[in-house]
Image (cartoon, rainbow, N blue to C red; front, top):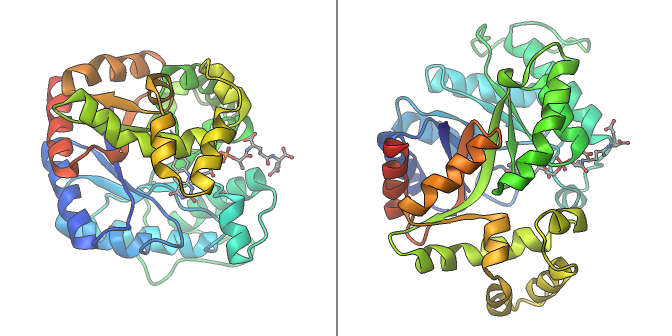
Length: 321
Ligand SMILES: C[C@H](OP(=O)(O)OC[C@@H](O)[C@@H](O)[C@@H](O)Cn1c2nc(=O)[nH]c(=O)c-2cc2ccc(O)cc21)C(=O)N[C@@H](CCC(=O)N[C@@H](CCC(=O)O)C(=O)O)C(=O)O
């Protein structure tokens, strides 16, 4: 099992860089930095992190092909690859409608757009020229492939990821989600003459680890409330959750009643949408994800009540895994 960690660039960047260095020191192999326009810029954050670290692979987890032209993203990731001495990875996803509505960007044909963008990345990063004549010049055209991971949840996106990407990052924390996703990824891989083993299946989880189980669970509740609120009925059914819990939580969040939302998050919701507990409680949960076909465990927000302490505890999990 590979281990990755996610950071949202909405804190001081030097603090994030130090936390990524700590993650590298305790054994994490990948650092994924989220990309939302209303947070700090993902590439400036990655450049700083690259200077503070030596071995951890790093990249946007995930950017999208709408806010930046794929050629601009290719130049950014090639630049990161130079700064980090060959450690860049590229996470790309379709983004979400609410964001593009806010930015006045038309969000059309996400599957086609992702496919076209990955084709552009591979052409430009290998030093080639696109049909439109775009070509990277000022940055070292990286001949070796920069791994391209696709953020995906919907069935078509999952199949596409299997077909065109080196890895997939799935916002899900429970083995039941991978029972549903893996056959689609495998179908896509086979469409491209690959096998499932050619695709790194990343579980981009909501993680919360602490020496005390209850403290770990409490730190995850608000994140789980947001995930559950955004989950469609088929996902609720998959986890045996009560119909309408998404609307109930969405309503509480919508009126700013975060205490009420947290209070509505029970163990069933925590189990469905997060991985929480002490290091000893984590091992069987990660093993269950691995048995379900996951090959990279990504510790996503909140990581725990105290990020630094939690990264060290995750280091214990990694070294005993
Ligand atoms: C578009 C959407 O795909 P989806 O994968 O479910 O999108 C949900 C998320 O993956 C997407 O919002 C991501 O960008 C969210 N996301 C992040 N989004 C961000 O904006 N920033 C992040 O940092 C971020 C991180 C992240 C990490 C992991 C992860 O899994 C997702 C992450 C969807 O509806 N897909 C459906 C329908 C696809 C569709 O529209 N098909 C049409 C069009 C077909 C065509 O395009 O040609 C059709 O069939 O006609 C499907 O896959 O079946």
